[in-house]
Length: 227
Length: 243
Image 1 (cartoon, one colour):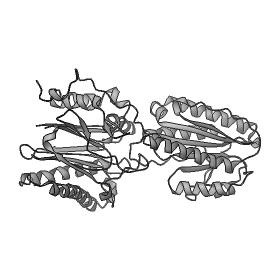
Image 2 (cartoon, chains in turn orange, cyan):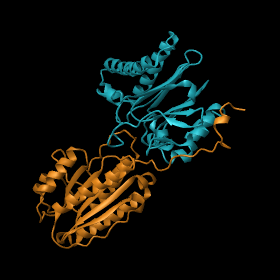
Image 3 (tube, each protein chain N blue to C red):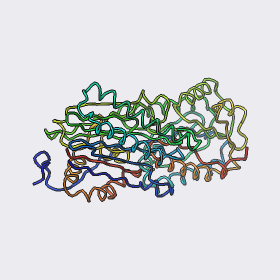
């Protein structure tokens, strides 16, 4: 008789594990769906989102650790709430309306913050959230407040914010919005699919990173115009 | 008294072709005592595995030396101070190593968790994540470690940061209450300690403590099983002492 037996009343060596401890990575996509994106850009961004969904679903680890939320802006701001990658279904964007980029950025930051708080309150560990803004135009609403919030949030490590310009995007405005240490990048043509594949590869790396490890994203050479 | 330890390379490390960056060391310097340490080298540090191995070995050999020199009778207050000395000694070893190799100490970044069992006390200290779990004579499980104060999970404090002392957590309890002790890195913590409330999962620890007492050869097999590896792809280190 083992001397520990009196203290451990279990019939066999059946080991159980904790199943809900996976760290989460929150990803917020802020996507321009204004009228100017009609035609090929709209088709490409929808195709890219479909591919993004497929790639995320194919990764067993990322599927439960990545949470994706989408804020689309075009004639208003629409929020697709955060879901884990396995539940994520790419929305189909219709190109319409003006470009309320400032309001969309503020909404994206608020949604990200709320999601992070939700996890913190439940003790679920998170990596630093990632935010991506994709636009082909110029804001049609005031954007200075949004830019201030982005700079503050990025400096406070509330989010790592990336701004990406497409085609005729006003890169000067984007440069004013993007965090000073992370200037905007320009999408090469309409390589949305390449961008979303790159994003899913990086999210997979982040989700599988050794806990405690700070991970840099891989170079954007597949989809961005060279700096 | 029995001690068993094992360190296994995580699937994520195998995939990326990087070695196991966890390390452990233990010693039973005189009858009735045991010193155990585990370390988890930082994934971003180029010499992480050397840092973890050096820190654990330094902590165990320093403490074993104290116990061999008849310091078993230390009062609780002296052990509280000694725990911090042990961490400082391990850090000094890393500093020395970094100097020898003309590197920064952060190149050897590692967490460090130690447990010292003396005839009177069970003393624990740690910097960074991982866990130290005791099985009391009453059958209750107690987590002696406290998750580090941090915002994001990938921002663990390491022994190598200048302000590491801010993140040191220590406990000292009467040995007579403790029946067995486990010390583990975050790869095992992920599947065994509920993050919410910092509570040890009896379904994990009770069988593992029992395996440590007999059937110890099955412990690595459990840690390599799909049940564990599907939920934790990090390196896994577990040392268990049955007192």
